[in-house]
Every structure is written in C-alpha cells, then in structure tokens.
Length: 166
Image (cartoon, rainbow, N blue to C red; front, side):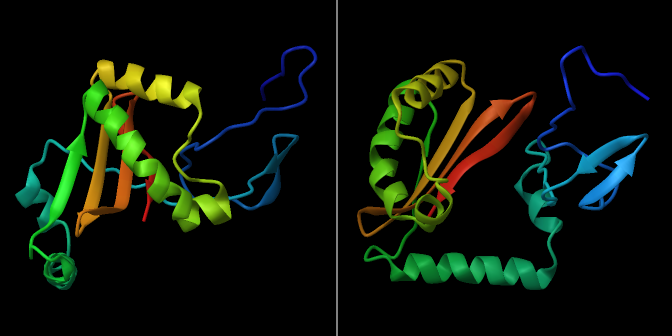
C-alpha cells in the first residue's frame, strides 16, 4: 500500500502498460481504480529490416497490403506513389505548412479535435525536436495534392505516433 503526498487525493496515469485487461471500476488495496479506456499499443522494431517486418504478417495480409499500394499508385495520374518524408527543421516546417490544410479537413480534426496542432508552441516544439533529429513526418500525395500525413516524435527511446490524418 502506498501513501499519497499531503494534499493529494489520488494518482492519474496516462498510457500505462498493464499485464491484462482491467475492470472499468474496481477497488485495489483500498483505492478506487477508474479505467476509462484500454487499447492495444503496438511497437515495431525498426532495426529488424523490411524483410523481417513483412514476415510478421500472414501471406493474405501481405497480399492485401501490396494490392492496396498498387491500387493507390494506379489511381495516380503518374501511376506511381508519391510518398515524402520530412526530418530536418526546414523540412518539418514545410510539412507543417502543407499538412495543416489537410488536417483541418480530416475526421480526426472534426470529430476528435485530434488534428495537427496549429499553435506557435507546437510549431516551436516540433522545430526543436527536428533540430535534435527527434521527428519523423511523412505525407502521401495523390496527383499533386497531400491526402494523408503522419507525424512522429522520439520519446524515451521510441518513435511515438503523435498525429495522423487522411
């Protein structure tokens, strides 16, 4: 049993790893535990290489993923994929400029207020992280227009998927 510091009524934990599924409401060691949501968190070892990564999927999943990529490329007027990566402060600033109009149109922004942040504080944090090589941002284009984006930041030894929209 742990005691709380004076003046505290409890603890709040975000994205905490647990051994198994927890009840939404329970009593643990005299404490009331409230778990509003639980979800699977997936991790990819980027050091394993592309071949080993693809080998983790079933043959049907690999087939479907490749088919979807081919169909998307076919929908492009050039017949190829236009997938761009952004990593340096200059590139990340360009990514932010290009991704914001797309982000505003996404369901993530409209329904969950989960679009790419537009404020100066986020922009500065993003540029600072890029200057430390702690950002990976990607954008998928179709016929000269951005149609999807992903933004990740390095956090405690991991690249964490922070924002995505399509």
